[in-house]
Image (cartoon, rainbow, N blue to C red; front, top):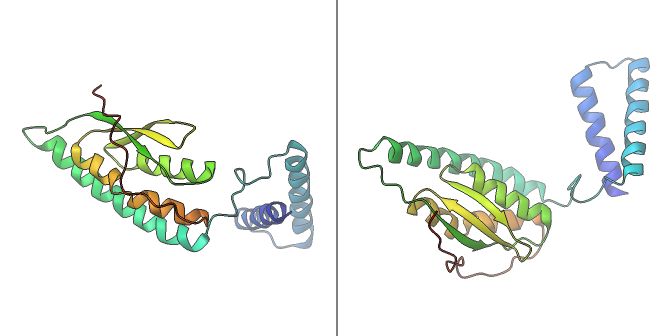
Length: 175
């Protein structure tokens, strides 16, 4: 029920933002549209934790997004330096790292955050919570292995953190 109410509020806010109409007739049309959309979503059984993740900690998201944006900027600069250097010090490789998120939404958030950061791509997400990550340089790999991003994504779930000492490095592979 919380997901349905939350989705209705989001749809109402989006409708008001995009339409800009505050006349009774237009507000009525909007209300009917929102109710119809909620009914269809309920019938399709798509209103759940994954479709509308209200369980994520909003305050952590507001801290995480600027941090992730800064990490993307730093990684872009690092990759530009690597690409523009005459030596071209790239060492492409894949490695395994373990995620500490307890939900699928948390793991997807973490995997996408790794992929958004230049120099790293999440290649595979396994059922045991292990990710296969491709890194262009050793520095990019070390950025993932600090587990800072993992801890921040876990804190957004609102779940208790699992403790880890380091990422698994037994899966070193050369492409």
